[in-house]
Length: 499
Image 1 (cartoon, rainbow, N blue to C red):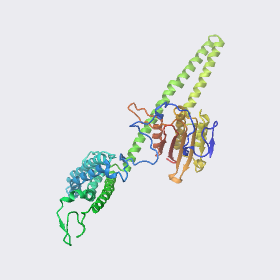
Image 2: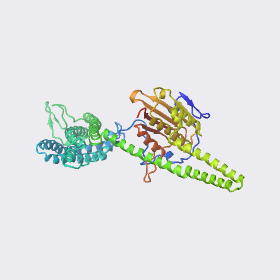
Image 3: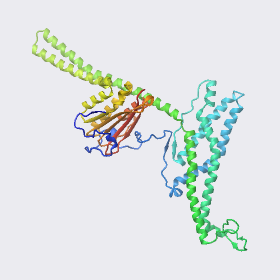
Image 4: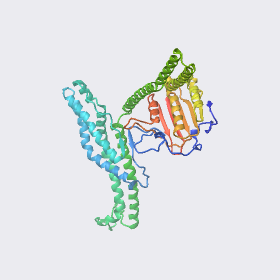
């Protein structure tokens, strides 16, 4: 690997320090910007660990086996089974009617419009079941894309009978009918047997007397012809059996509810492909906005900075020319020329920085060279490790190189300005091969931590990390942030090698 360290590094260069749980000591200061503030309710934070399913949010609390029969969650789930069995006949009837009515209307085409609206009406059932899942099961399932009615008779016809969301809702109504019956009956039987066995010692006194084969009389539950639960030992045994059934009921109840939950997510939520399309559309919109904002910023910098400075240079040279033409003081003219010369050099520096912000010239020689140059120019010690395999199989796509470079540049800037870090470690490596190859960046600083991604608010402003995340998503990459308060902050970016 290629390692570049501008000064004595405060982060160990060997290996990936981000895998170590011991941060390098750094100054303890308060956050200075939104990027390094403690997370608050409502903030959108980059995911850490495995990526969650984007179709739902699970608000359920963890309940152990011993506490399950007494947990409010278990009884809410049992209440869901009651609601499911009450709604199941009506839901099944609607689903069956949607299928039968569509088949019946195939000949009179005009009836297909009504059949289409029946299919679309399944969305209403889906919305109701999602609400039940949210309140009773603690699972907030995202709503699918709304139905859009197209113009024209045939467009309206096919958009209705071809509504995938409506058909998936109809399938849910048909599939959950037998599940509702079986789950309610089995769960209720286990609960009734459990509670009955636990309280048999109390209510068995009101049972009618039964005669055994030997002529003796007994009062209590009978198993077979001559075995009755009417002694203290047998009563205690039945209490234990009833208690076992109650604990089993909680697990069986949870299992059936898990099936309902899975069907709700799979059939009543958005499909992964539709979420993918929506995500790409949002990412594309953000990318266009970022590009427009960058052009406006360049125009503003040129107008307010470089252009104003060049106008001043022109005025200074004009004044010097006038001095010389009218026989004025040559020393004064020389001072004006010298001032114009200094202003010209400052303008060139501004133009060079502006061009570097658009496309760093060092990227023309590859990502490794560009990152080495970035590390050398950083006011903070930066250690860069670049796996030779990154460019051994050919240059990366220009867009990928640019995004990777600006990700590292932004993260190093954050470490300098906000995190109060004393060192940064950058690891760049290639994962996989062929079309599925990915470029992995890992940037770690030993600062104060507490970084978070702030999405645009009402004023349209957002943090630099949010901009990085959007930029990474624009090429189907992933952005992962881990930043506990106190540090260290570790950002992992995965980018496709080819766009």
